[in-house]
Length: 498
Ligand code: BES
Ligand code: ZN
Ligand code: ZN
Figure 1 (cartoon, protein in one colour):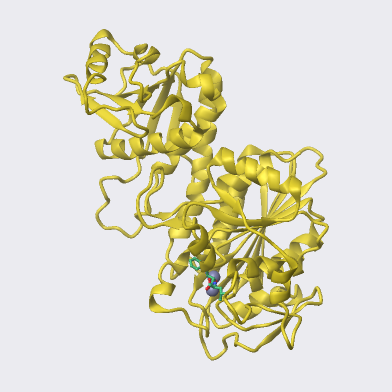
Figure 2: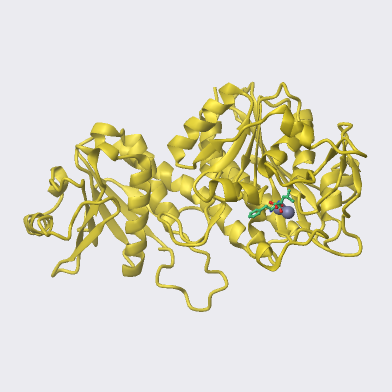
């Protein structure tokens, strides 16, 4: 559960791999500082090679006679340098080093790097890049792949700036990646293993291990008593019973604010009686990724110890099929007085999120509520795998989300809301239907549905991560599979809370 990468200043011994950073203008600056004369000579002749361009992420290793490796890592154009570039360049390098079974790495930073980015930004991005790249889901593989994660890696950082800030920040980046990896591992766990009960037990164990998180699982008769009608109905066809997982972090000092984080946790989405197509069902184990993002964020928050109370809610169910399944035409009566006619059992996420929105806003007097969900295929069509779509009517919360998004590289794009969309969700025989007869604007329909379950005075954001929760090809620092999207974004929002 904890990271296997240790970060130091200069190592006492000669490292196995030394990384020198280089911009696209191909000038070496203070890069050769920690290298002996022999290695420095190799670097300055390599840099002149026509095939070495310094493009971002370009890795040119040179094998030395003593078995060590010196390599040039390109960072692209100096003026374009960003945390994103550092995160993915180091992610790329780490993936190459995995194949060499390297145990110690030295990174030498040119002074020029800190002209545009501070040590904190550089260190966090570096730690995240390496930590996120050092993950792969191999639980069910007989033969471990050659890019399996490194058990123990020592990372030594050398620069002319005060080393403490850089080391501290890199450790933080590694820790944030470890939390995102908690989310990714559980997200990747198949639905026959990661059942609703398994996810609840995992959350209980995580809270126990963290020490400063309280975890409660509301299930069975207590679920009925709490009037979680969405969970009850969506989950009733499955032999894996639904539950509401609640995690609470309370600061040790006096606090005045509470933030509620909600994550859609559908352990598997068949679509229910409105069954998905063969191709549409594939990958629906990732329908729990909203909840996993919240779980990962709670793990990070327990370690970062911010001064606000944070509540994580994971409405957890399996959307399955049986003679006892939720039907199209059923009407659900929610405890806030809103009735919902089910027009499509595949629009199940909003039904369980409604429970968490009602409960979260009533029980904890939150200063803000943020829900994260793999809610609609429409957001994937609209924004692809590059941005999550989000809705938020509160200008201050919006600013916080967008700032955290730019720092963490977890990209969000705001989509519109209008009374016309709210009108679309009004049903004939109940107050709302869960899906309008037309697919027009269907990601917005999701947000327009959800806003009926939260007091409009509470700042609230809905983030649809259906596109960004997983990828189907390697893209540094990620590999194909879940990305842990949301863990770092939510953690940063909470940490910055004023
Ligand atoms: N879990 C899906 C959304 C989804 C689709 C996530 C593709 C990831 C990739 C969700 O429960 C769903 O099925 N949504 C429907 C909503 C519709 C019935 C209004 C959809 O997107 O078609
Ligand atoms: Zn669905
Ligand atoms: Zn779903």
